[in-house]
Amino acid sequence: MPIGIIIVFFLIVVFVSASVKILNEYERGVVFRLGRTLDEPKGPGLILLFPFIDRLVKISTRTITMDIEPQDVITKDNVSVKVNAVLYFRVVNPTNAVINIENYLYATSQLAQTHLRSILGQHSLDQLLSERDTINDKIQTILDLQTDPWGVKVVSVEIKHIDLPVDMQRAMAREAESERERRAKIIAAEGEMQAAGKLREAADTLSGNKTSLQLRYLQTLADIASEGSKYIVFPLPMEFFDALSEKIRKKD
Image (cartoon, rainbow, N blue to C red):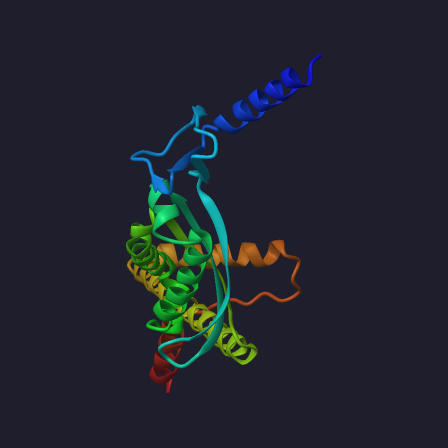
């Protein structure tokens, strides 16, 4: 085979490989033609380029999960904590993500760390622990506004872990224990109050009929006898002693 044909065949292969590109479903291609971007990003699928004239930059449009490094935060009530979070975002405008920012991944990460420290510093420790959803939404709204010119959409921000100092953990443990004791005492007092009310109702019911009171005495004796006790206590009403004392005075 002549050398000329081999050279031509090689040039055709190089030309085809440089001009034909395949982009996946989740990818978009920003094409620079002689240094200027085309109106719309290309893809997905098969796209054709002019070799040595066009330059392709691939951008993924899938949601990216980024772990925000632990940040030292001083809360509004002067408590030093270490907080880390998870950031979810994706590129919605590939052209802006390439033109308006040099590295949108690094820029979004740094912006998230900065706003995480500043926003958490505006809240007290109790708010950080009890109002996570509200704080997450606030951080997400601010980051989404800041990254919009970059073509980046912040989907969600989730505070993952709040690392408290050891002395603060001990103080919170003592507070939780005191709260549990308080609730236990309240529940016990409410139980005693309800039991006293039921006993009063039972006493009112029994006092209305002397026969029912006598039957209750007999039932109590039967319960004591069934337990095999050696001692049996006979409850006597106070009126019996009053009547006995009256008879003794009359004899005198």
